[in-house]
Length: 523
Image: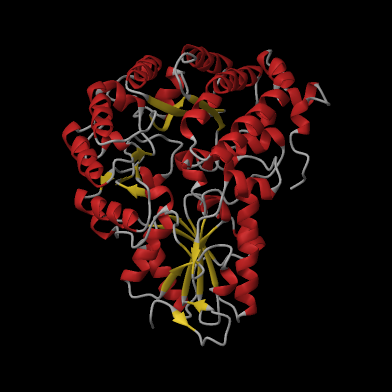
């Protein structure tokens, strides 16, 4: 069967396939060229859908009903299925009726956060008691796919992606009408499940994908969202609250990375974003970056495009190899990259040495847990000297966290106030080795947690407008983010912020607090 099955011209230009991959609507956007704006998907529904879609989450283009760009994970599965000889296409989520037909036996949906249980989502949805855009759009996508499949005689609905762990309960699968959820890596296990479904064999409801060897990770065939290129898979630092499939660091060969860069550029990407849990440890054999391999990576990629960004890095890598940041910056600047600054997501998590020892002893390596706060501060100094802006996360509610632990984190955040950066406090989510534990919710917050949230908000209110002004290129989006979203949040949260600084829950102490009026639209 050919890649695209084209029905007769008399029949509504329907394009169908045996296997259709798609994604929820929050993943079908390049967010105006700023993947950081993509974090808006984790936000509770505070604005109407049309405003979210137009200003924050404009859709990627659809050609012949196919998404011209798709999440990197979707593209990997597309490549793995295609190389296995399976007829597969990647449909735009707003064109599913034109793609899913009677020939379709399997529909696979990628989701990062299907129930809004991710750390960022659970934090803000718990505080404001609203569903996130990610959860709402996932529900809409699943319902739509299930309805189309059933109207065409049935078919299997399979869900995967970074947020698949949120769907592990079979009662949840029944509620959504999902036949199978694949948790973890899918290039081997996922392909086998799809083959079974195509043969009409029973498939399990919950599957944990096996770790994929480097040689079996396929190259993408088409453009990814934001030009995202996977350079390494896994981490190896062994944080207990992280996903099991990140246990081992595997760096992909440079020639494969460059081929994926060329594919993205050929299909219209303005640049590429190098993705790994820590881009600075590409090719490393341990916790210390291999400068030669990292510089070679950036040299070769920047020869193809001057527009190179990164997704994640680690403060320990910055602190132990300060010259590496300088060399990368000078290299990208020399290639013609006009970025006002370079950035990436990075985890602080806590400033408590005891919690570092207990839950993330590998995170500070090659430094000691007792040095973690100093490592974070030193890394900020190095980054600031080289125009790097970290977007950091904290974890509130790690099991056994004490008021003193939170106070240490507050002190650290206050010391970082002068560095251009963002700091986002997240609620603890029990995954990885801590799976089965209790989610941390608003009801569990100590007075110190409210103070920490207030300290982070003040930090972010100081820097967010300047970062938006420097980073966002789309004038309409820049105006909306700065003059509508940020200004509105700052105004509405002025009263609650005063209470939080005193350790008071503003949603309980003041029934008319502005925070309760931020969400006039019921989800």
